[in-house]
Length: 112
Image (tube, rainbow, N blue to C red; front, side, top):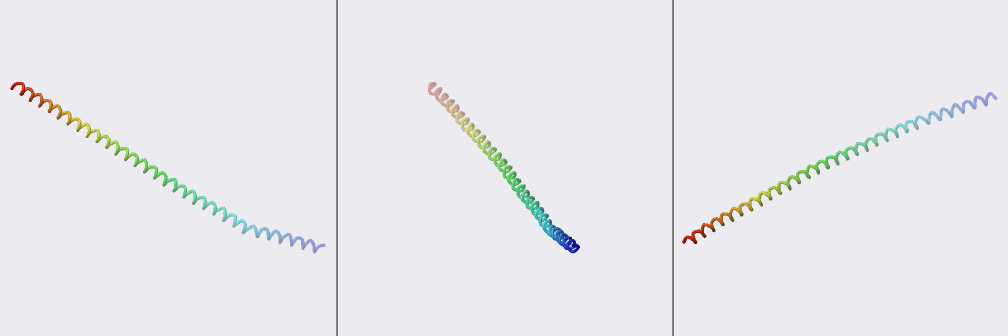
């Protein structure tokens, strides 16, 4: 009976030692997996941040181009209006001058 106690104790001790020995590489594998996940997650977060930043830059550039084109169209509209008023004004001035010329010629005709 004493032998069975020693054998049983030795087998139990060996089983416990094997279980603990297997826990070391499994624990290391678990730690490696956790760290790899954190690194991959940080990489995805970094890529997402870069992506968002590039969209913010693109949106800002689009807004600036929109403002520039709006200002250009407003400037063209203002220039076209000024040109139209200038042409209209010179035409009215010529009509007044022509009307004055016609009335002076008419008065010369009447006087003759």
